[in-house]
Image 1 (tube, rainbow, N blue to C red):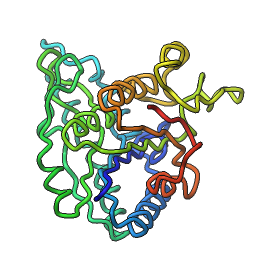
Image 2: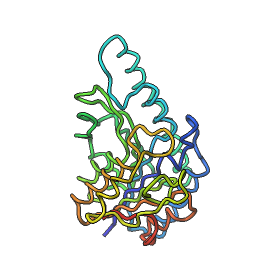
Image 3: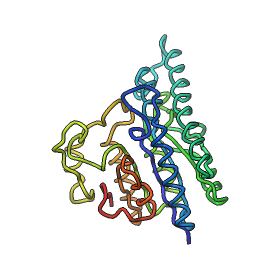
Image 4: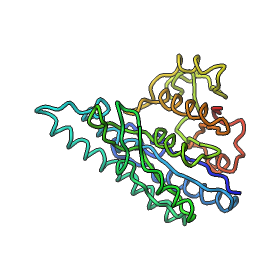
Length: 273
């Protein structure tokens, strides 16, 4: 019986989030090689892949203020252009990731979230999941990414990979989710700015309130809410699917993505359960 795992490559690790539209192609390639090795070692493993938009989508979205929605009026035409430009920027990074992974022999199939996603006040309320299920049934690796979406209340918004994963997980029921970021996991402060920051090894009912109090925004430009929003999204998903676990790890450390996919990363990063 196959095991389904969701893997996200964070925008912070595959791009330089402080420099617009700057991909870290070496990291993307290494991640592709690690995924390839893991799937060869575990033929029973099925994978849904996602990535953040990093310095591609976030800079453009922030420039136009898309995370606040579009206020109809004299300026709305410019905002809608920003919606289109943000979608194009996110797709450019996705094309790069797709091409690198295909070159590593991985059967990647990109599924554009904005083609079917619909939000209400920033919450993703619906998105087509059947193409991902069909792709998996044919041995393909569905690839999604942080994208724009139409919003019934705000006009438009930005949807994170975590929101998309949560939507897909309700139908596909993965056993594990791995989130690979630029940091080792969830800390009580930003470890990129505070060397004394302490890692939360586990997040659960006993300490979720403490974690939420101490978390701050992410390093660099991020219009999807930073680490706090990501933790809340994943914690809510784990509460709704008790058999599911989420592990946040460093995508910087060579070999750790491979270990996590193979289920050999116990004690690494932060476990949400």
